[in-house]
Length: 228
Image (tube, rainbow, N blue to C red; front, top):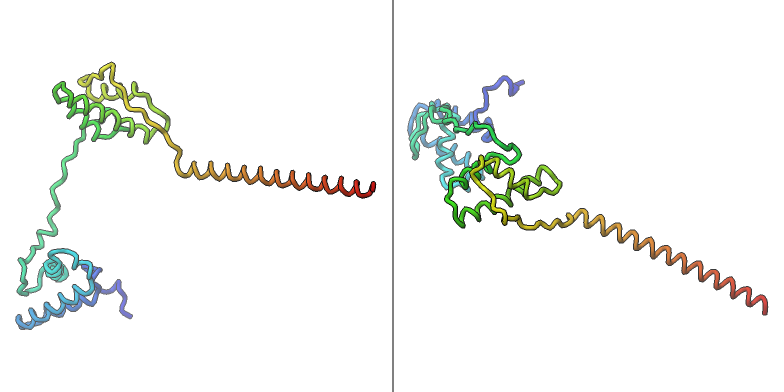
């Protein structure tokens, strides 16, 4: 039995073992012209096995690069594209520098902290006032994500003062826009179902009441007939 654990490792599993074996076979062909002819046929098969690559502008270039990767960059062929090097795929990317300064209010995040610092550096004018208004409304929106209760505008203004280190002063006539809370569709559906259920129950009671009255009427009618 030939088990996968006993075979060589698949370098690119999306192409399967047959493609890897075909590339290994082409690598052992001594005639270079024959080798180039066979590898073009292998690249055509690779394109059929991965049709999603056809959506890319340079999908043929990727196929030829994948041939080099599967062969561990040891195949000697004439590629229509520049040959990639092994170091290109092995070299690690440069680390992304991260701001490690502690946050003054972690529940707002670093983006809001950066927005506050940017607004604090603006000159005192109408543009800065509008930016503070937009920032305050956005901070209230973010605050309600973690705290489902309503938040007062005084709390938001105090947080802006804390985040800016006192550089942004909120005018006394400054007020946030009013937020109107509407019930969610789930709540509306349950409320409507409840009202419908109550309505059906009332109608059922009325039906029973009408039925009861009709029985009483029929009973009285029978009594009247008996008297006659």
